[in-house]
Amino acid sequence: MNKRIFSFTDGASRGNPGHSSGGVLLTDESGKILFEGGIYLDKGTNNEAEYRALLFGLEKAADLKAQEIVCHLDSELVVKQLSGLYRLKSPRMIEFHRQVRERLARFKSASFVHLPREHPNMRVADRLANKTLNETLKKHPHQNTGGQ
View 1 (cartoon, rainbow, N blue to C red):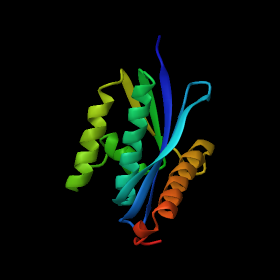
View 2 (cartoon, rainbow, N blue to C red):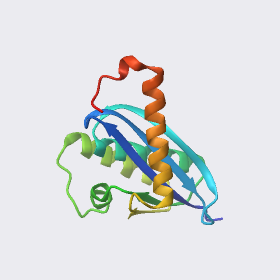
View 3 (tube, rainbow, N blue to C red):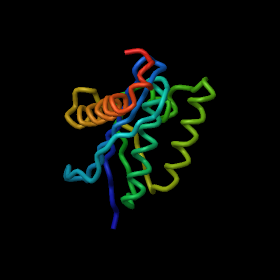
């Protein structure tokens, strides 16, 4: 059985760099939700949050025994970096890129698609990322020292 999963991920950062989080929505081919959730990522830039949200999504897709994954991101920069169209310069971004490539080895196939932020599933991923960030900062106000 070939199990294809569609991943919709978004990263959020307040302060850039600042407190960051990621949101993930995983669906099957019919659009049925298989997983949705967020993860607090500590401090980082917007681009780092995008990569780390994708990493979280890849982990969850692997847990669901996906064989194929189609990764949707609203960050055109990250999609082009992962597709080999843009080079990476920052050592931190190179490391995140390496981690994504390492996790992709778990799947028979993987592809990356830039999807506008306005797409309904991207809105869900954005909402999950921001909800996670808001809840974390509310529970731990001492962490709320980054930018808005």
